[in-house]
Amino acid sequence: MPVSYYEVKREALIALYVALNTPETASDGQVYLSARDLAPLVDTNTTLSFIAKALMSLEEEELVELRMDPNDPNRLATYTLSDDGVLRAEELTGNVDPLYGSRSALRLDEQMIEVDHATDKAVEVSQAMKGLEEQIRTSNDAFEGDPAAREAALAEVKSLSVLWRSGVIRIKAFRERARSALGWIAEKSANAAIGEACKQLMKLILGW
Image 1 (spheres, helix red, strand yellow):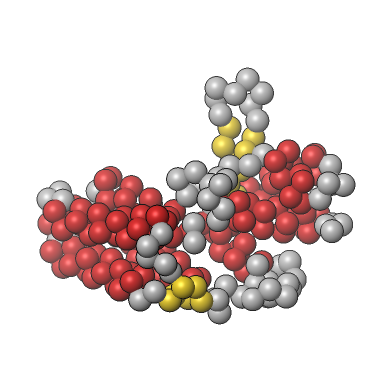
Image 2 (cartoon, helix red, strand yellow; image 1 turned 90 degrees about the vertical axis):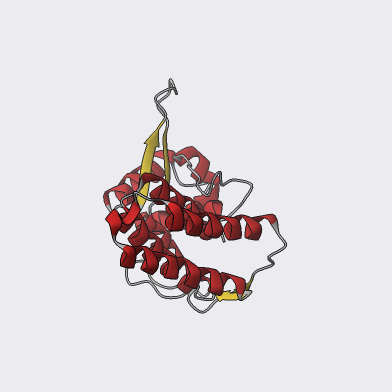
């Protein structure tokens, strides 16, 4: 049970991470929760103001991102994990973390998962990879006329596809490789459509 400020921050990160990886709560690979949403997931004895303060601190650390719906008359603040927040949460669900201490669960960099390519989620990832590869190959205004960069981008996506099709992957290593490759492709292509395709594929991968 969380008893300190840092433990509340830790549990809030983990709760957001679990929600992000739960199809019932995540939408388009993303999820936003308020302090009130997180209260039963963190500790029923922790006050909402305490959780809200922890979330604001996490935002300052750029581990969560704030969203406020302008159409919401209550202006309720909701939060989701940033890319750095996902990495920190992955560390927290392992057994070593330099800031928050340790846990006994299996580290995700050691965790291997078997991908059932017949499932809708797996098919969606495969289709997103195929679609991105096609966009890289056919977008005339991408990569500023640099054929070497285009070929390198295609090689990056093909490499991810090979790993994905292998059926058994080290999930953390795969996510980190995808984040590096897709981030580079989005930046190097200087193409909005390709950048959005990279973003959507990364969200799907983070959903595993």
